Length: 311
Image (cartoon, rainbow, N blue to C red; front, side, top):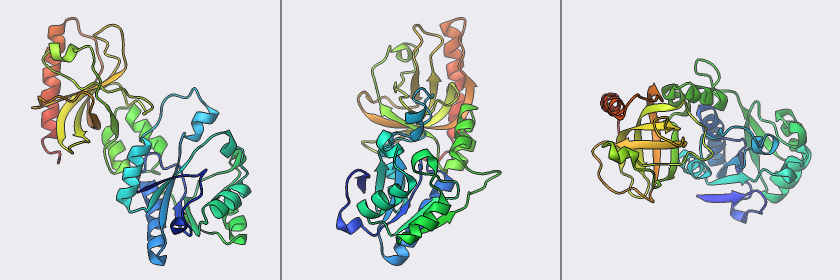
């Protein structure tokens, strides 16, 4: 799949494309509806289809101290967009220059001149351009004068509007199952397995330590998880703690999955940990024996919950 940078022109073969325009961080049900309309439109007219995203997220420019909130990395988004059937992913590099571009110039100079876009599909609430003054009305009025076609997809509802904010709230509240329903897949953190303090190994539960980086922090605690080794595609079941490890000093924020019935070496490998069930909050125990007893219970519960989980 092509990975395009908005600052660079595209090849002739990608001009005349239909673009799904939005942030599409989580690529949830609502985002998938917008992308699906763009892909169908492109297919019907024999055109390339492109799904756009913004990186860094605009919030990072305007609120640089905001807590981490990302639901996916660019690499994860690229795979999701490819699976959806898009021809390419377009990454808008969001910086002061792009933020200062008027909505009219965004349409005429970037979408039309640089990319030769034929049509745009957005959600009803999408805004763009300096001061977020661009909206679907401007796309229709100003864009149509310049030959740009546009379509709008209304919000998808599932016991309320499906949104990234709602998914983030669910994860922060320890409800990965609701998040998965809205995303159509489990929330997953991807990273490189690091060497740690070996505390889990000493307790009989060797863990694969991952930095959480810019991902949203789900509720700290223990989860039933699956892990995918990206190099091989192997999927493992396990239990994971995410948080600051209150039992050990100094506090260190980590994702620490323990995979059942696995004895291989994961150091230096890239894995993706998917959150399926919240088991309990992080806690500090009076002794390591108490911690070990609780870990045994956690693993037993996770095994039971994951027993019906397809892998």
